[in-house]
Length: 291
Image 1 (cartoon, rainbow, N blue to C red):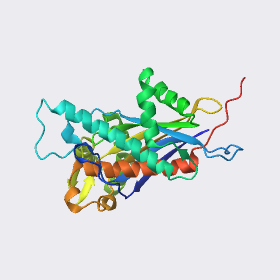
Image 2 (cartoon, rainbow, N blue to C red):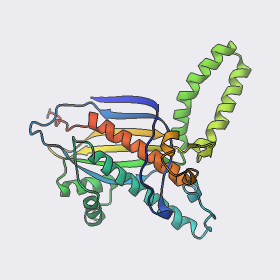
Image 3 (spheres, rainbow, N blue to C red):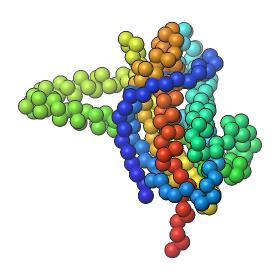
Image 4 (cartoon, one colour):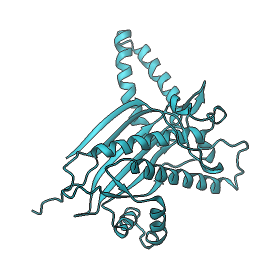
């Protein structure tokens, strides 16, 4: 049976700063919606499931590299496509690297090292054209019980459909309060909605940094497929991170204003949340009974 959850929380933490022009980083207030599978009994063998963390992809269209990186001088139009492609590759690789590390810290899993996933991606993946099948093929060759891969659905920028969903949830509850206080005054309620939209738009279209607080949205979806026994999807969860003042404080002060630092902090926090959730709810599933 599949269980769904909603969370709204604030988090903090850090990850070492990667090399120059390729980084992704942030701070955050986390609110999230996600679905995962309800836990079932572990296998009788008691062996920790072997997990391959496959490559992540960037699903959100980054309109310009300056949306996710702070440049001293903006790149030229000729340089922009290559720089944006490199920044996206760095962000997705960092997500895979972080997930491999954080999931590996959970005692319930035996996670294959990142260099093994890279080797398989170089040797097996080119032979398969469909993205999901490519990662599953990597898992089969590795002899993994589970294969995990993910998508960055929002990174600095958020697709309109995700912004509207999140905004509708928060605005509806807040509008109820405004209506109760104002006696359902239409002018007051309309003014509040206009103000809320105008203040939310900068966050979801790139984010901002002010007075030591950073707002850089990161939305991740991870999917896990079981290969042992029978191939089936057993886990699918989303994690959202926006603001984390304490998280950002772990970086040197001169770096906190950088978009890539703010985004990586949020990315790290979101993946840590996912790894911890996986340790509680991700298990091998029984194969469906034949009719």
